Amino acid sequence: MATASIATAETNTFADRVAFEASVAGLVTEDFHSFNGVGDFHAGTVDIGPFTIQSNISQAGRGTFQTGAEVDGLTFNGSVYGDAVVATGSLLTFTFDETIFAFGIDLDEFGDGPDPSTIGILGETFEPDVLAFGGGGLTTSDDSEPYFFGLTSNIGFTTVTFAATGDGFGFEIVSFSSVAPVPLPAPLAMLAFSVLGLFIYRKRQSA
Image (cartoon, rainbow, N blue to C red; front, side):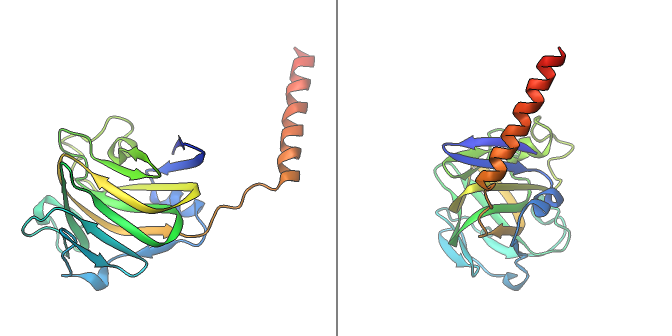
């Protein structure tokens, strides 16, 4: 798990879905099963219900939900996934009807090209493949393996954007939460600082 700062936001990024789900309250998950065969979210918008998916690039055969194993090199193995592509100057955008504080998604082959593919949230960009594969990015041995990207924030957001100079990829199982994280109550925060101060004082006394 990695931590990043976005202006005044406190965010955590996750490369493991289990850890992400354990840290989020009120999680909602969309598996796209009821959207099989639905499109086109390139040069158009698909209303998923709690959010929409839209892009400004049109490419034949892409921008739809489909199912199948090893289709176009994707490896979701039979479950419904979105077959997407982003190119220079275009974005694939998820827009939520309500403010959310957590977002997670399973990706396949996003970032396996020569140029970085990024996810934009709260004005910051993230390279999920780098997070998922220990800082080294994707390699020829793992670029066909699906991986997870998740983010939580203390500041709400409504859009998530995918960008690249030219990248075809798949996505499935989007999870999100509109439940704001509960801040530590002031008395507890003061107690925590007091205990920390006492610990530092005792350690100095014993030195």
